[in-house]
Image (cartoon, rainbow, N blue to C red; front, top):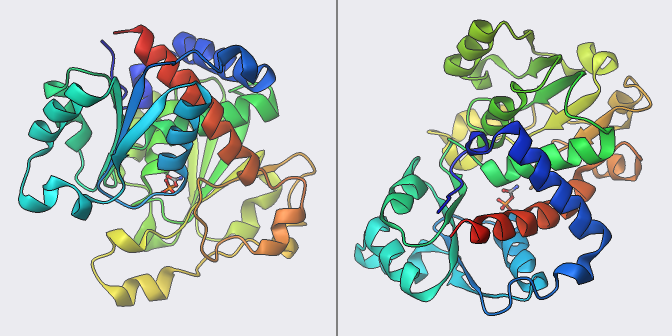
Length: 303
Ligand code: CP
């Protein structure tokens, strides 16, 4: 039985197979409409979510399966002190597969160790968000044609943004990718990531001004400043609007550059940018459903 804790749990070849399946689901959804008849997905979300939880639920329903779960720790027995280990033992009696989001790093891993069903990490603290990474990789592969040979700018909260950490870890396995980290000093990429890049001999630069690097980018991955992970309100208020991508900045970029964002956005992308054909973040959210359908199918086959 397989779980998904990190995007690295799949080899690049397995990821290619997963993305081929996701693209086939996109082309021919009716072929898969009964693939999970009789199966149940549990969504156990101890932290807020719109996209991840609802796209998982949509994915299972589109596969013919059904969904149970909770969207808030307060409405589960975690509020009475139940451990994640006990909860997953119970969920294993009720469902065939579980997607779990938790504020504590490693909590889905603890669940997986005690689980009788596949567990998918749907985001654990500031650590990893593997299904967002699968969504990002599928979006890049589908819209750019391949997963190599590009310069990607990652902009905003690179310190607390788990989507950024997961994506960098996944991209280092592909050829000829150059990373530009765009952040204020206080929100720089963690040292363990830049050390890993140096060890692997992968090119990266750290800059503060987004304007300076716009012309060099093939992809711009914008992120929200993660209010919920700040230790004090003052720092958040000072940094939250540090970057605002607007049409003036988009004019500095190439014609084929694409803007991605895991969403939700706050102010970091002006709504005026949404009409630009290079704004790919809503298409990215749609790819999230196809890749989660492919993932559910793949993990259920492993049982
Ligand atoms: N991208 C993402 O994880 O969004 P949600 O927090 O709404 O699930």
